[in-house]
Image (cartoon, rainbow, N blue to C red; front, top):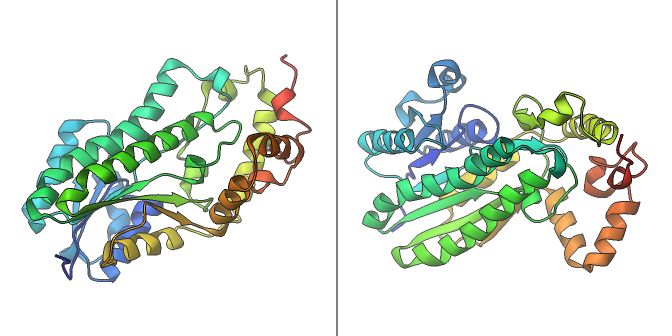
Length: 298
C-alpha cells in the first residue's frame, strides 16, 4: 500500500543533505522525523519548517539507545515510519598509511555500522505495516576510489554491499532499499564536517605536501558545485515514487559521467588515466601536484 503522506525519518537532519531533504519533504506535505546529535544546538536550523509536520529527536547513529529512542519518538508522534533517509556520516581525508586505528574505527562505525543500526531499528515497524523504503546514502566514492579518500570510500563500498544484500532480504515484506550516490556538492561536508587525519593536520605525514595541495583544491572545487537541493529533490522523489525503486540512484552529472567512464575502461586503463590526467575526479585530487602517488617520503 502506498500512503499519500509518507513519514520519513532522516538522520543528520541538522544541515546539508539532511536539512535540505527535511525542507523538501515537508514542503510537499510529508511528515518528517528529523534526528540529529545535538537538537539543543542544531534544532533551530529547522525553525522555518511546518512544526505540525516535524518531530525533532536526538540521535547518534553510533549509540543504539539513542537510535531506539528516536524511532520510538517518531512512532509515538506519527504512528509509523514509511521511509528512512540513512544520511548521517562524515568524510575522513588523508593517506591510508597515516590513519590511526581510532580514525579507521570511527569512520566505519559512523558511515557503515550506523546505517545498519538505523535499518535494524526501523525494520520491525516497516515489516508490521508491510511497507517501507530505506534510502542508504553512499557516494560517487562508493563506486570510484580516489587517493587520500580511501577510508571514506571503504565505508561507502561497505554501504553498497550491505545495501544490496538488505534489498534482497527485506523485499518479501514490501520494503524497498535503494543506494543514493551523490557526487560533489557544496556543503559543510568539505569544510566543518570533513575530518582530516591527525598526521596531516599536525604536519607529520610523509605525503604532507601533496595532501595539503589536494585538500585545498578539493575544497575550492567543492565551493563551485551546486548546493544540496538536487539531492533533496531526489530523496523526495524516491519517497513519493509508487513503483519499485532501482538498486542505485546516482545524483549529479559528475557521478553519472565518471561511473560511465570507469565502466568503459579496464583496471589498467583506469589507473593510467588516474596517474596521468589531472582532470580526473573533477581536478579535486591532482591539480597542482605532479604525481602525489609517487612523492618521495620526507
